[in-house]
Length: 159
Length: 360
Image (tube, rainbow over all chains, first blue to last red; front, side, top):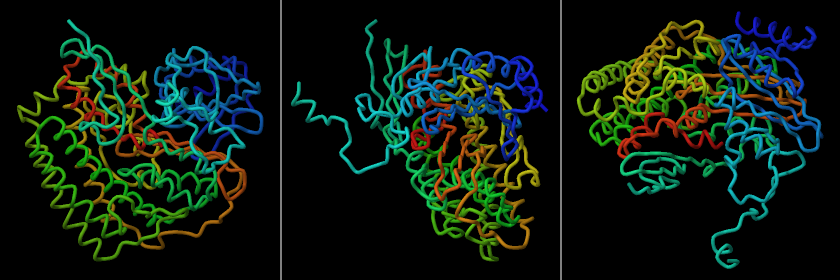
């Protein structure tokens, strides 16, 4: 099976402890790596014949950010990376997988993760003049306040 | 030659949903294009964190107005995996039936949109006339034409009776004839070929680099289908083929989608023939044990991806949705390059965009 091979190869290349692989339900393997290993890990995965990146999930656990890179080929393989800094940064994988651009851009605008080397670092979903911070970060409950975007009329008045 | 920039969207007759393209032209030739999403961004991932698992079934269905059922199927699948629930076979079969009916409806809708965009209005009328057959079936089964609200956590809320089955049998027979006739008429049609052949070409290598899924990937020769490669529901018990083409242009995508529609009709016939007896759902607890799960399903446009993390409460702690449109959108600027402006309509329609899915 392809995923198992890739998991073994990753553990060899990155000198990872064999015990840290856990299986999630629905045939999904998961490996925790450090953020410095991301490019090497993705290269290894691509070399072992898995080239499909399903998605990048970003989430916040208290003060840490977790990035999950979900690869797939018959079975799933997820890379888990924990970012502990105040201004989280990580290398962009767009040079290896150009299809990751939208996922990285979304994580950037929703959580404020800086992807170093992201080819097109402009907002994907939020308005260009969005001033409401990072909407998916914790402790930002939705409210019915006015959106923090200038309307056309307001723009006309200021200029 | 003078350079001009033509805005296509956010509101444009070519687009059925808001999306903004800025197409730079040199004469009639496209030299560059940029795209901008977010005009129907509703923050569904954030909203889902503030609703219970049960409320989310109905929220998730509102992500898309065409493939609403496959979204709720994928979501329910992931919550059921966290709850370690086993859905009764009959429930799974009804889920699959709706998934396949939705695929037929989505592909026929798309065919109509493409036909309209390339000026073949008769084909548009025929495709949408035949789509009504599927919508009528779905209305009879679920009460809704596009939002079915059939899935619940633990199974489905509707059961099929004799009346449904006889309607299905009769309608599917008629639909097979009509779709085969559409295939016969466009396969060798000169005007259709002239507007779609060698337009919006994507090579197999590009498909892999951009992680494209679904019919667009299969039309370029990439053999990928979640139903066959990682069967969910009860797809492993059904017998079906995954059509594959290698041309990689709008023509191949059209023929492939019609072939897929024929396969979907075959699947529906199989499902109603081998529909197991028994209950359609089991009851589920409201609190979901802590854990994480990844779930995938094959929507009409390709792989839908869900990630759910539970912290043991009534609401999910994180819900991530990746829709197939995001993977095809990123290839559009490359496909448009060096095309004639008149072909932009065929390229945009050819990849079957669902912007509401992409924006969430």
